Length: 376
Image 1 (cartoon, rainbow, N blue to C red):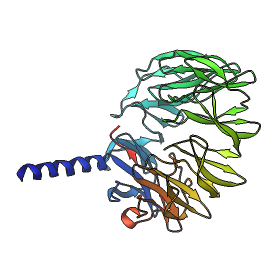
Image 2 (cartoon, one colour):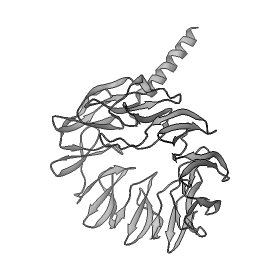
Image 3 (tube, helix red, strand yellow):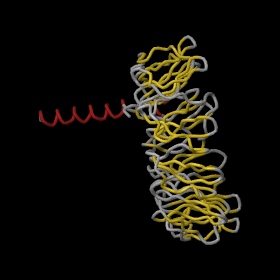
Image 4 (cartoon, helix red, strand yellow):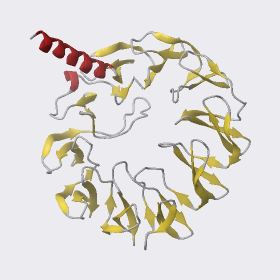
């Protein structure tokens, strides 16, 4: 019995620790605070302006100066900056006047070469600009890539699109070319697949080799976990695999990504869902429809939004908005359920609902950001 009691306490402590790692920024009346996934305040509303946590710290304002608070709401870095941005890869950009610099989580400044414009770190690197050319800066403050490119996009999973002249390629965060700069367009990197355009041909990269997709006039980015993505031919959308084969003929007016074996598609202004064979499994009857979440629920819209399961059953009645908020900048605009909670809006404001449609803490806010992991 004693062993069972200890096991229960250990389990409860573990669950509490997991919950404590996730916080969502909410705005109640005119003050910002942070709630945990139970709906309880981890940090009471007290800030006129603040941001979501980026790791263990969040930017917050006091007396028109910005600093960083920890998960208890205490100042980890005192508010002494005119501007403060999110942490990424251990560093955040801060500014006094027009002078930008990088600081670590202790507030120590990173010594770097002078850049003509400063960019956030992302995936362990930051864009570095001198004149019209772009390079890469490492977290040690030294250049990984000298400014030789005309453009570098954000890194995703360790790779980013780069442009030299009018042509695009891709590099990793060590600065090595993974796709040569020979293409008119290159898609965002995803382990499931990457598309590109060479001349008039759209295609995918298979084992590093560009493989044209027959008759494709556009291809859209692959989504994590699916080897299929949607592509356009003769002004209709269908699906290709990451080897460059058409697997579902292009016959839809609109389409979105597969998840849980289903994808939302539209014809004649109405949305439904198909399986990976192209068979209709959920009727075309919605005015809009989003991708299924990993939780197995998808937002669908008539006048308002509700949620269906993979059988097409409406499990949470329509009555919500799921678009981005308007009261302050929303950095996370992902829609639908994430880890058992969905961010929704109605006439009372913004809140979160669980998979039963129950409102978290039975409370609504002026605005709410998505939950983020504060242990990263």
